[in-house]
Image 1 (cartoon, helix red, strand yellow):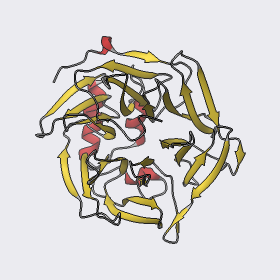
Image 2 (cartoon, one colour):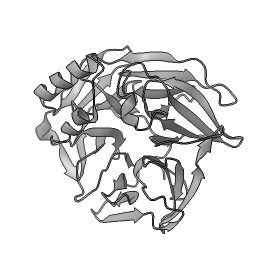
Image 3 (tube, rainbow, N blue to C red):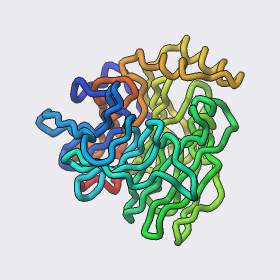
Image 4 (tube, rainbow, N blue to C red):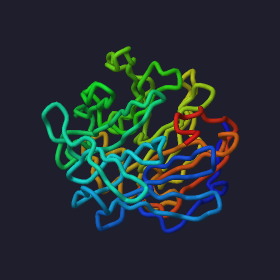
Length: 325
């Protein structure tokens, strides 16, 4: 796997606010989360000509703190958003700024801060909630494993996995047979077989990451591999279909990585280590997607950057369900 030097990375857009989750479509559009310091959330749309439009939630039911984290593109142009604010929940944002609550509770319990929502090729929505703990920082250690995944489909909403070690991004494998989930505190990507009714089989560990890796976002490539973004260390890691792991890009501070690793091993990891990862050119890279005409342009979102970072690779991404939107 070819290593990418930080000098090969360029940036798209400017003045973005917490562009945590990023998508690219065939038309050349790039989308990124928007969350300003006042708790107003939405989605930033970057057009092929460089024009930037921010769709802010300002109509309908808007929680006091609405923080766009992960979200899904919908065929009609709307966005399905996971609210990382204290009220949690899954919301639909229309292009005119109207916000509608789609899911505020599951199986009789109010949703806490909600991490990610993914729409698969069948139109089902898979929602990641990192933990029931409030504040979430109480789950910043190994072995808590109370993260869960919700399935929203024609039959309603239900928890289909409840044993995830800090659930982060989830994606349905291109085969449609597996749901993959990043375990940030478990430092692994796991998968569940998807049954015909949408229920999931038992958790299987697909790949365990080593020192300095805190998996946040990921995407599949056309050769059966996985590309993962790690916060704190600001790494992009590739896992080939045969399990071979390679660091593609790294822009982290070695001293911070060592200190965070020591804290992680002692179950003393804290938000301070995460936030310290902001101070790099990648701004704490948190998500990854493939775009461009050949799907060989990588785009990354971040927790603290003001742009979307991008670089070219030799392996094309797998075509995602939203490619034609």
